Length: 83
Image 1 (cartoon, rainbow, N blue to C red):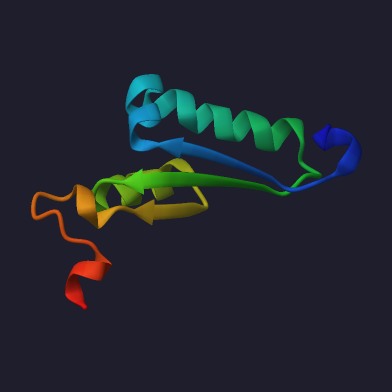
Image 2: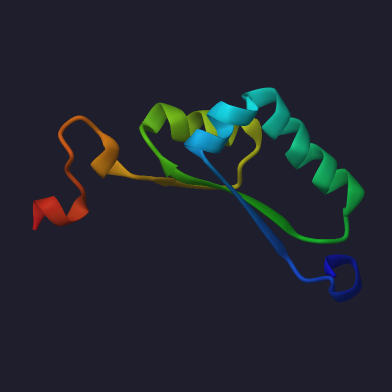
């Protein structure tokens, strides 16, 4: 139980989850968690953002961590492609 342990919490949402739930729902989910448990550190992570714009949008929603998956771009390249 987070309330009893005071352990930090990491919530994660993929771009698909954001699309399914909607931007407003995710934003209010983050705000509600912070308001309900202000004493517990909370990180909201955007997993596998499909583009810089998706990642910027996540930051604007209040996400504190983003990961962009470049392999989802049209060229399919990732960091390993440039070795």
